[in-house]
Length: 138
Image 1: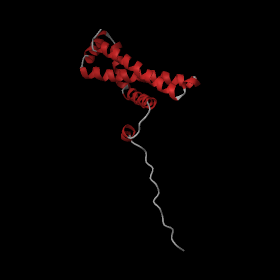
Image 2: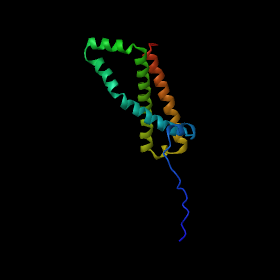
Image 3: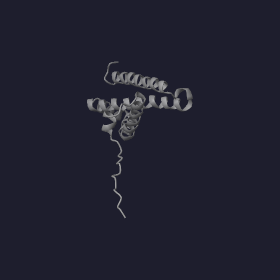
Image 4: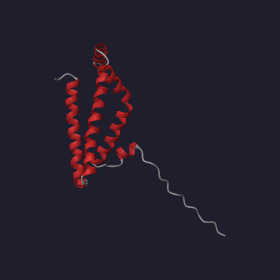
């Protein structure tokens, strides 16, 4: 019997973040989807920090003063700003997905692009307003 020549089997691997960011041109709705997941992960990871800040602000007048002193640090302000962005984007994108789940007319390529733009614009404006308040503009 003649031995069959074995061809090498094709190798399929999971793609990495680098390939997603460089090789693939995702539509805006896909980028909003990825940002929604990233912001949800950030909120989950930093939940103990957020609960600590919340607890410090409510315990007593003295702990509130400690909270204000802690929040006056620029690094803490930047972390808080990133977490505010994550919350606002996650909230706006969540409303987008709820609308897509309840309305068949919202699930189309054009509506997906339009709602993705709305999510990015609204969450950016809200984050800028939060940053202005956080850094003392008003």
